[in-house]
Length: 319
Image (cartoon, rainbow, N blue to C red; front, side, top):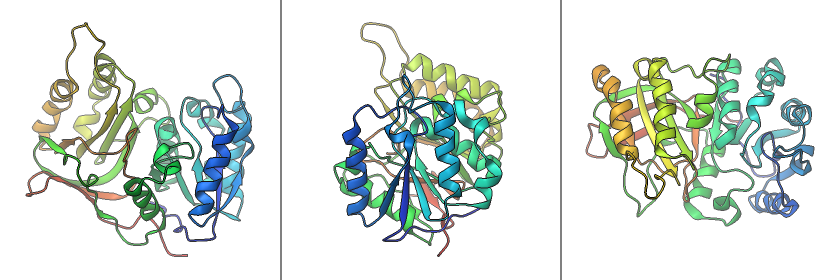
């Protein structure tokens, strides 16, 4: 893997919107103010103030912002404004050779998952699944989320054990076991959307992380079943299930629970291969939320007194 340089106070952060459009211009100014209070300088990309239907400007503009900000030597890290929809449309317009020659911190989640997969696989770049410019947890200065975000983007040592916020339930064990592998994944909808494309997730020997928002249980079932049929749960080393905000059944209609779906779809292959699976990790569309480094070697252990996972190597290098 290629490890970006750690961020430090005074560094210039690039703010871009490679996905959905920012409808309220005030959100951009709020994001700039928050990052400034954290000690960073900020450069705002054109995509942050552009709108084309549900997109943050046309495909060419959004791809251009990604490429230009990786090419800009003055920019030390790139933070995405928001998710929504749009990143799959620009995957074939990104300059992966340029990114590989100019590795830097890249942060986002939700629809940004498609770019995480592409940069991890095409550039071997470590990226960060975490709050974005419009994320309430950063805008409101929520303690745990902000600390996790800053620690992930500034630490040149392994982050170690990734615990849920104080006062919240610890992760639950779905399948017992212990495994090591590089952490990859993100939003389940986007992972499923890459199947059959050049950016399809490579699960071989990896620890897979999934989360989602606003999906009925039968849709979660359909997407996980697609991954099962593609052999992803046989290829992986283990599975971490994050937050599933607003993913409950429609009122008055019969449904399986998410836990039943996880047990039906993921658990059989995991048990057969001795692959650990945990659920209830506070990462994704939740508040508070932890920031996860993708591409880093992790250990998932459900056999200890405190089932969970830890990052075994540093995600960043010193300046």
